[in-house]
Length: 606
Image (cartoon, rainbow, N blue to C red):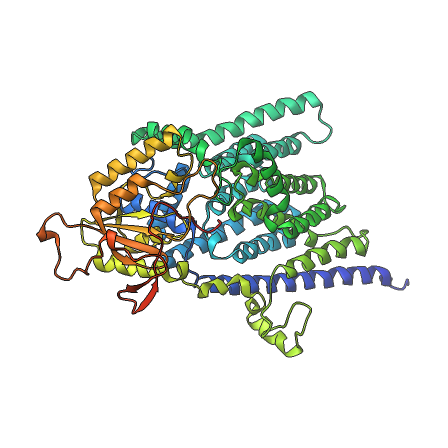
C-alpha cells in the first residue's frame, strides 16, 4: 500500500503567504473603511462655504421663487449646474444639514460607481479606490464640498463603469450609455467630456480584440463614436428644449457668446492678461499642477503597477490602460478653463486615486516581491505624508508616536488626520454670514428685496440664502462690471444693471469685500463703477458698517415709510474718514472704517 503524499513545503509556504497577504489586505481595507466613516462623521459639522452657497442660492431662486436661468438671474454657468443645485435643495433642503446629507449621498453613489468601474481588477482595488478618493476629497476641506466638478464626477464614473463593468452587454449599448452619462456631465461643464473618446477607444479594443484587421477597427470606432454621440445628444437636446420651452434660448446665446469669451480671459488670481502673455501663463500654471504633484506621482506609480501586472488577463489590461489614459487626459483638464482653481483638479485627483489603488491588486505568483511591495510602499508613503497627524494624539509622522497612542488611533482614526475635519470649527467667512443672515431675518419684511454687491468672498449671497430673501435684480455678482470696461457688452451690462436697480429700488443694498478689489492689475480692468456709486449715494443711507461689509437702506420717499423701530440712518455723505473708528451698533465694539468707495473688491483666491 502506497504511503500518502504530503504537499511540498515550498508549495505550502506560497499558499500560506498568499493567504496571509489576503488577510492583511482585508484588515487594512477594514481600517481604511473605519477611517473614512470617522472622517465623514466629522465632516457633517462643516459649514458650507465659497462657491457652493452661491449656486445653491440660484437653485433656491428656481425652486422657491420660480426664477428661470439666463432671464431672471445672470450667470455664466450651464443649465446642468443650476438644475443640480435646485434638485439638491428640493430633495435635501438648502440648509447646511441638508447640504451635508446630499454631499454624503452623492459621495456614496460615486463610491458605488467607482467600485463597479474597477471590479474586473479585483476586489481589493475596487474596495480601496473609492475610499482613497473619498479621503482625498474630504481632505480638500469645506471649499470643495459639492463643487461643480464633484457633481460632474458622478456621471463620468457612471459612464466609465457602463463601459468597463458590463462586459456581457454589447459594445454598442455600452457606448450609448457612456455617451448618455458623459452628456449629463457636459451640461455641467463642457470640458468634462474629455474622457469620452478614450472610453470609445476602449470599447473598440474590447469588442474587436488585438488581432482584428485595422479596417475593421476603424469601422467599429466610427460606429461606436456615432452611437456614443447619440447618447450624449439626449441631455444636450433636453438642455436646448428647456431653454426654448421657457423662452430663454436667446438670453442663453447672448450670455454664452457675449460674456463668456470675456470671462474666460480671467486668470485664477482675477487678472486679465494681454494675449501674448497667456501661453506662458498657461504653461507655468500647468507645470505647477496646483501643488498636487504628490497625487500625480502616486497615481503614476499605480498606473505602472496596473499595466505591469502579469496576473491580469487581456480584459483587465484594457481596463488598467483606460484608467491610465483617463488619468493623463484629466491632468490637462484645468488648462481648458485657464484659471486653475483648486476644484479644477478634482477629476485628475479622482483618476490618480483610482490608479493608485491598483498597487493592492492581485499579483501573479511568479511576480517578485520587489514588484509587489515597492509600488505599495511608495503609494503608502506618499499617502501618509499628505495628512498631518495631531501631535498630541500620535506625534508627527514617523515621530514621537507612542505605543499607547495606537488604541486611540484604532478607536478614532481621524485623530491622525486632523486637516480632514478641522474646518468644521470655522464659521462661514469668519462669522460675516451669521451676522448678515441675522440682520436680514430681523429686518427684511414681506415684499422687500435685497441687492448684493459681492462675489464669492464676501458672504453676502450666502447670508441671503440662509435668510431666504429675494434678490432685487438679475445680477447676483458684482464683479462683471470691473473687467473689459471698454467692451460694448460690459457697457450694455452696466446700463441694464442701473435700469434694473432704478426699477426695483431694493430695500437694502449690501456691499461685501469693501477693503478688496474685484479685479486685479491694470490691463482691461477698472476699480470703479461711478454710475452705480452715484446712484447708491443719491438714494441710500449707510445703515450699518463693518470691516467686511456695508449695509445701505433706501431713503424713505414718504414719512410713512419710516418705521418707529428703525435704526438711525447714517447719511452716505457723513461716512467716517479712513482710519477713524466707527461706532458699530448691535456688536458693542468699535471697528475701523472702510475706505469711501464701493465700486471695487475681490474674493479670496478660489
